Length: 380
Ligand SMILES: Cc1ncc(COP(=O)(O)O)c(C=O)c1O
Image (cartoon, rainbow, N blue to C red):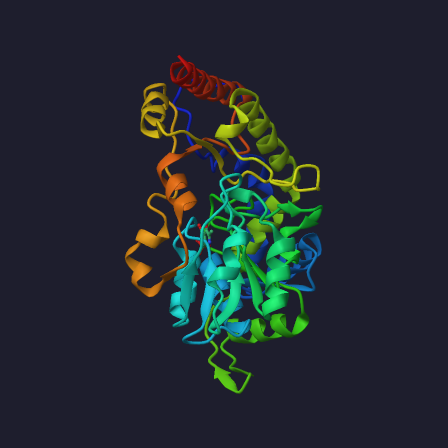
């Protein structure tokens, strides 16, 4: 771990983890450049095989981005114009964009306060005869309650597509999150835990038929399914991204270990009520901490204190997607009280594989002292 720096503590460091990979990437790049095999070569093939194996699925198909992956997965899960897809309002815009691009309707239901993930108890009331699919999003790398979600899907004959853009490496009950849906999608955007140096994504497929169809569509071949002819288009994962991702994948476990250490430092400073809580402790859930969040109803004061102390933070997702311009294409089911509260209270702290532990202790102490003073004032 690098020594503590005197500069600001940033939310991301995309360069330091790249330093030990640089020579290998440059060497591979030179060979690639002179190979003439620029599209869907051996790097994409190797990455697909490794990720399928690590995520516990039949096949993985590399595509242009996490957004493309969502669009293709939903389309191949049979989502058609006029259908409804039940999902969370507490997520990045791309989750609902993919549904809307298919002329289907996102149906937004509330989240749980403990892990900020879709609340399975809110799903059933949102189901109508138009519902085609459920789309959970393991937000910030915390697993969704897949037993309950899959039981509802089975009971109502619905498809499950998991938006795993933030959840590579996340385990639910000891099993990779990506193995619980009919399909799951990854993003390799440079700030993700498994990062590319540009855009990229992957569809994880539980069955080979879906994978074959997506392979066709990403390469301009039409697909006929359920009496509908789907057009092909270009949504291929770039060979250069796959090359970098293969190098980074070999270091993923080590980098993840450092993130977990940072999260443990924060956990030791921050009371349980103000941070992620595993709703099913001891059941083999594993959080990858794509982001580490803390909540307080004095969020803006805490953010200013950290900023004045040289610490960068962020506010996600405020307001939640039921207030987004695109919400005119959505239906809201029930109260979204917890999503609204998360939007008002959650603050994202710095976490990445190169964050010096001394910096994490500094951040953790500032937050811990702020919350302790707040609790003391509330008690007095
Ligand atoms: C939850 C979620 N879904 C989808 C995406 C879209 O991924 P991409 O940027 O690779 O298109 C992101 C990316 O930030 C995301 O966080």
